[in-house]
Amino acid sequence: MTKLKSRKRAPATKAAPAAAPVKPLPASHAQDVAEAFDDFMRAFEAFKQANDERLRELETQLGEDAVSADKVDRINDAVDEQKRVLERLIAKASRPGAGGALFGASGEHKAAFERYVRKGDENGLRRLEGKAMSYGSGPDGGFLVPPETETAIAGRLRDLSPIRALATVRQVTGAVLKKPFATNGPEVGWVGETDARPQTDTATLAELSFPTAEIYAMPAATAMLLEDSAVDIDQWITAEVEAAFAEQEGAAFIAGNGTNKPRGLLDYTKVDETSWSWGNIGYIATGTDADLPADDAAGVLLDTVYALKAGYRQNGNWLMSRKTQAAIRKLKDTDGNYIWQPPATADQKPSLMGFAVHEAEDMPVIGSDSFSIAFGDFARGYLVVDRRGISVLRDPYSAKPYVLFYTTKRVGGGVQDFDAIKLVKFGVS
Image (cartoon, rainbow, N blue to C red):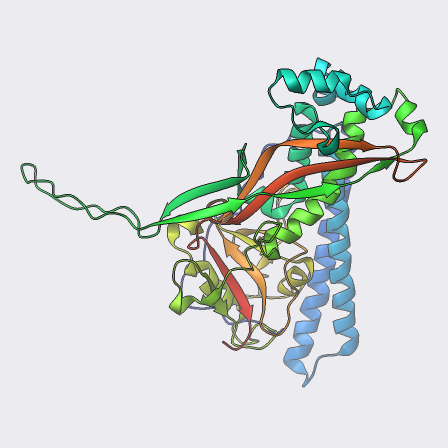
C-alpha cells in the first residue's frame, strides 16, 4: 500500500494501555524474554527499512519491484515469528509450575482427586461431593476437579483466549444467565427546587439470554505416568486441557452460532454504521473490495475509532488476525510515521493509533466483504459466562492400554452491549 493521506480530524491520542501487573519472572525466564524482545525489535527495524525502500520505489517507478515486495513480506513474516516466540516465552513463564503455591497446598479434595485419577478410587470424591451437596454427577458425569485446578485452568484460558482476556466474565451456578438491559438509557428530567417531580417514562428493557454449553477435552495417560509419584496430577490435567479449551472457545467467541456453543460477535446481524440500531453490530466499509483504500486507509481506521461513543472509546482495543496485522503494519501516515507501533515493553501489546492490538486467529483474513477488524470496548460489549465446576471422568476401557480423562466444563457467551463494538468491512459498501 502507498503512503497514506490523513484526515483533518484530530487523531486519537489515547496512550496504549499499560499491561496488567505480572509476577516477577525467574532470572532465566526474564533473560529469555528480554533477548526475545530485543530480537523482535531488531526484526521490526529491519522491516521498516525494507518497507521504506519499497515505498520509495513506488514513488519513483510505475510499478512495485517484485524483489523488494518479496523482501518486505519475508521480513514481515520474521517479525511475526519473533513475536510468536516472545508470546510463547511469556506464556511459559506465567504457567504455574509443579510444586508451586497453587499446586503445593494439600487438602482432602486434592488428595481424593489424585487417588481417583491415579487408581480410579472414587470413594473419597463421592463422600466429599455428597457432603458438599454437589453430588449428582456420579460415575457417568465425572467428578469435580479441586478448586485450585479449576482456578489454574481459568487463569490460563484468560491468557490464551483473546476474547476472554478482553470480555467481562461471569460465573454462574445455573445453565442460563438472563440479563435485562436498558436499550434507551435511564429516563431523567430537570426540575426546580420546589417543583413537582413527575414520574419518568419507563425504560425500554431487553432481556439478553446467555445459555451455557458443554465443551470437552479428552487427554490420555499411560499407566506409567499415573504411577509416577513425581508427576503433579493437577498440573498435568491443567496443561493437557488448557490449549484445547482455549482453541475451541476462541473460535466460538468470534464466529459461534449459539447452537451448543457460545454466540460469536460476528454471528450477529451487521449493518452499516449510518443505519445502526440496537441488536445489530455496526460496521465501517473500506469502500474498496478486499482492501483498504490506497489513498486514505488511515481514514477508514480513524472513522472506526470515532464510530464508538467517547465512553466506550477510552477503553477501546483492536481485534484482528496475525495476517491482517501484518498488512496494517506496512501503513504510514503523511508524516512518514507508521500507524502500527511495537510494544514499549515485552509484556505490552502493539498499538494502532494509540489503541492496543490483540490477535485472534479466528478473525477472518482480509478478503472480499470480510469483517476482518473489530474495534471496541469488549469488556462492556461481550459477556463470557462460565458455569462453575470442571468435571473429569476416568475411562480406562475405551482406549486400552491408555487411560482417557473426559474433562468437561460449561461456557456460554454473546454480545451484551451492541453500542460497544464496531467492525471494519473490506468491501465497497
